[in-house]
Image: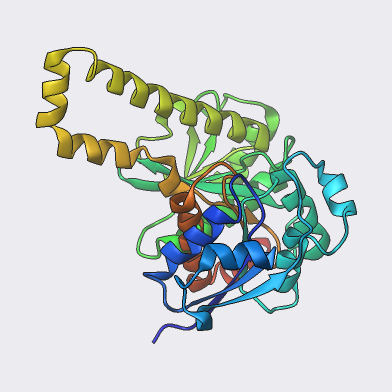
Amino acid sequence: MSKQITIAVDAMGGDNSPNKVIDGIIHHNKKNKNCFYKIFGDEVKIKKCLGSNLNKNSYEIFHTIEKVEGTDSPLGAAKKGKNTSMWLSIESVKNKEADIVVSAGNTGALLVIAKLNLTMIENIDKPALSALWPNKKGMSVVIDLGANIECSEKNLIDFTIMGSSLFKSLFPNERAKVSLLNIGSEELKGNEILKNTYQKLNTKKNPNYEFKGFIEGNQLMNGEVNVIVADGFTGNVALKTAEGTANFITDELKNALSDTIIGKLSSILNMARLRKFKKRLDPRLYNGAILLGLNSPVVKSHGGTDYIGFSNSLSVSTKIVEGNLIEKIRHNITKYES
């Protein structure tokens, strides 16, 4: 029997909460009976959403009516005190009462409150946001997605180690292949920080990953690498560009198949393939950004997702715990520094 995994859940973060959060938990629990959910938020609203859809032995509610709003500044959210659903859920991980925390709340607030409560892993200077992207051959880990606008060579090397550790936790049977996101694939391209990081990663071989050099934006989805490292500014621009491109393609295909009789007939004949295409580009199935670098794992669900997306962030959380991510990062960072 699988070891029980305890997930602390901020039930009040994001749009349409706690409804989508509770529905996400119910959906996730159908295939994850080894999970126990510590749910933080308004008990009356949570119980109304739960009904009788979840075994009472699978969860515990911790009541608070205080929550972090989407409009709160990171500092303002922290100043609200220690009784918000976000703070309490993170604190439960700090106190070793839960294995991991998930929130769909304010990203800036989550970063600040997490850093206030959870210590950094030794020898790592800055935490970083990472996420999963689809590629032609499977999935990629992309790091950093906005936590650090400016990064040093040391930061990018740390992100390499953390990103490859995350990839191995999620996909233990695959080899981590790392590239630095740059304006060109040649060694002489890019700023001095990128070029110096390239030299260090290329010189010091590591058994935990294979360094593949630079990668350009138009190669992100080809599947030749599966861990993509960037500073937070570049990574966030790449993320938003990819999301916008996927939405554009989906909308244009939908319009092309619905504006003529031939298009409509074609869509009927190819319904199975179109569903597969739609599923491949469905952002809900890749929901769940991971804050790496802290001594306890923190997962950020997109605030605007629905229960399917939130359920996926819980699935990512389960895999992270099962894959011993934090121990992998500690081991790999120590090994690199030695």
